[in-house]
Image (cartoon, rainbow, N blue to C red; front, side, top):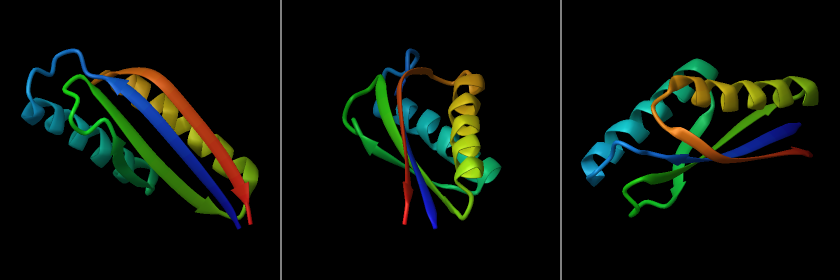
Amino acid sequence: MVVGIGRITLRLHACHSLKEKRRVVKSVIARMRNHFNASVAEVADNDLLQRAALGFSLVGNDRGLINSKLDMMFNFVDELGLAEVIDSEMEIITL
């Protein structure tokens, strides 16, 4: 079993309230879940208006496939244009 874990830190330029931030973050999370069938959640920076950290994971049996899907997820979020990606991390664990 192979587990892929990713974390993306976003800068939200146009958000001036938690309500605006929540709208953008929920949109990004929903699109990632629908497009990649992955587990996605906001994992840090909950109280900061212009910053969000999203964590996500995938499980499979092929390391190469998990690695390519994680890369596609990073690119997908960047291409959405809803927020600027300022940091990303990825780890693949084989159990």
